[in-house]
Length: 284
Image (cartoon, rainbow, N blue to C red; front, side, top):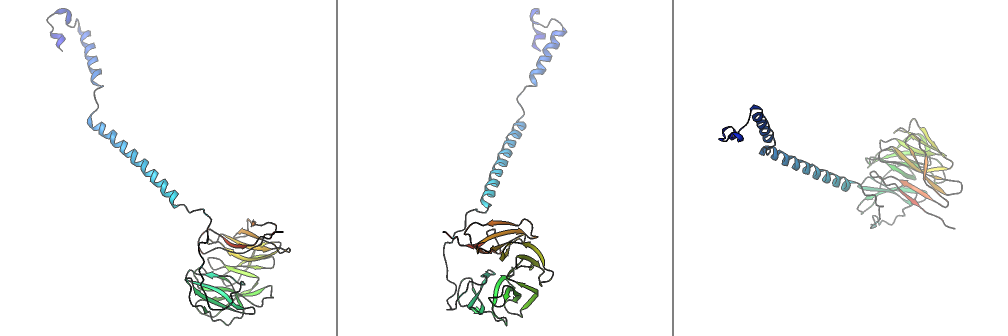
């Protein structure tokens, strides 16, 4: 403290209290000194961490948007002919596939056969079976068996059979007689009989009614996750509507209906969320 050694008395501290005040002021000024170098480095490090976290959030958001399935309506871009065997392909029965082969009915009314062809096209072959007029109703998800309706075309209800693939002895499913049927993903059977829809075990046993409608239900089809099913209902006026319900029959509701509407042949592909169906709208 140079003021303690000043030669001129009027410039020195006059007493101890002046000296104490000066020391206190000096202590306060030293506490506001420039922060250490390592504190500044830590501040910059936090800025980099915040910036990196923000960039990660932006990238994650972009990936979520990119990975969301498109809601665009599917468009048929090309049609490829798969068969050229000269046999008539009737629209009775379903066209089904396991991803490698396509199965279909061919021949003339009263003498139906079950044909098959590669999904890329080529020679066709007939699946040998002792059943006459076996109309395809469904295919197991693993492609191990066909579900068929066997009987005359004038019969309202026909027995339900399974045909093992590629070959095997057909098996009658309990006492089920239906106008249409299909497989659940787990192998259970959904079938329409009269104005009702039933679900039965894999072997056709223990049928349980899950829905009743005012009309004739046909073309039942189960969603890939097995939680819903749809079917077409034909009314007495020969118009039709597309109806959906939960597996237990709850939430029964029309999803497509209207004057002159003719929706048919509903079918869910093995994978995906889009329901396929045919529709013909009549105009006056």
